[in-house]
Structure formats: C-alpha cells, structure tokens
Image 1 (tube, helix red, strand yellow):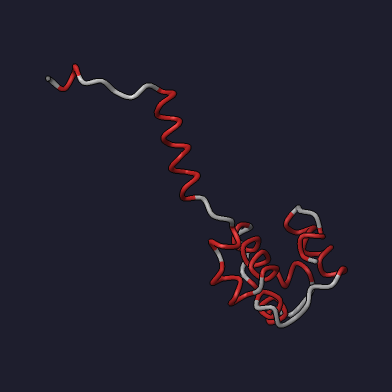
Image 2: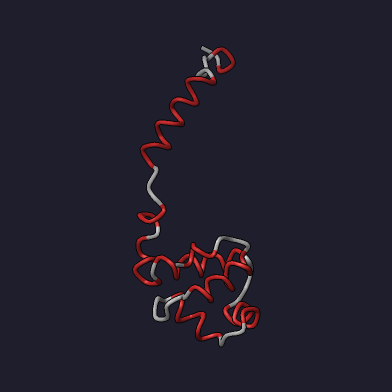
Length: 102
C-alpha cells in the first residue's frame, strides 16, 4: 500500500489516545516538585517561582518590599516565616492573593 493511501486515525480517535496518555502521565504539582518542596518548603517554592516568573532577583524583590536580600533567601528556604504583613507586600508585587503565602 502506498503512503498516501494509508489510513490515519480520525481526530476523535487521536484525541482519545492523547487523553489516555495525558491521564497516565499526569501527576500533581506537589509530586512533580517534591525535591524542591523538600529543599525550599512549599511556600518558599511558590515565592521562588513567583520571583523567577516576575524576572526578579532576590535583591530586586527585597528592594521593592523593603527588606534585606537575605530575608528573601530565608523565606524561600523555609527558615523565616512569611507573616500576614509580608504576605500582603509580596502579593502586591506579584499581583496575587496574599493568602497564597500563608
């Protein structure tokens, strides 16, 4: 049979196969980032991810919220708690709900 005469799966069949593959491979974000959570803490990992997404260094973020750069590092590594006031300041920078950091 020539190549142009071979049957291709229908769009519906392709979607079904794709969905099965996606379901088999899908994992929760916590499972996917388990090593990062162990190293940084869950909230620290969110802070670090938000900072990277915003294109900010620890120093730049620290300057914007009025703290020392090592405070950002300590929060990212779970060595310094993020209180309600700090959560509000971080949320304002990232444009998200402050409760993400609590």
